[in-house]
Length: 231
Image (cartoon, rainbow, N blue to C red):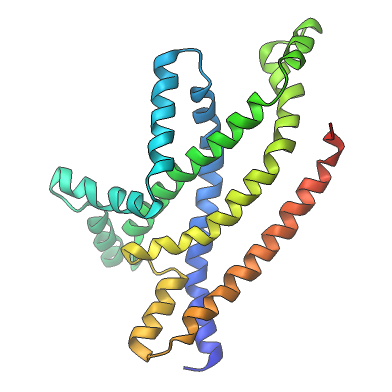
């Protein structure tokens, strides 16, 4: 295979990596907010359950969570659910790895939602109580205080840690190959096994570096735009 053929083959895999990245970010980031509110709830049972779930998800390796999501439902119900989805989608629509992709996305969304929730919680709890009280004195409701006073400051404070998690997310997509999803690392390993070409495995780093570079520039500009919230 020529260099350009290898590049195209790896780019096909990186498209899958980007899909996992995008879906996780679009679903996991919003989901983290209600989880954060549950962790700060004054109702102790809800708070306890939320904290336990976050503790478990953050404490168990993401690869193991992917295995649990993909294999455990089949063990419990004696039916390989996601494998059945794989076969059905491939036979009827020619779409490969559909079930595996769904399992990976579920695992990623749950995992990153819990991480994002802790970032949100830390940002919200970092706002001095006096700012809430000042809003109430001005006649604002609780929701208005949160939207108009607290939220903008929280966004400014959580951008740096969120940026780190987002950059980590694109690299973590490589874990999808543990259940044979054809992302970029899986494609590179396939070339090594079938074509005895090891260099594409190292070449994958270029794709990650370029995308992380773009993310760094974009997130850096977002952070600069929020500089008017300086303490």
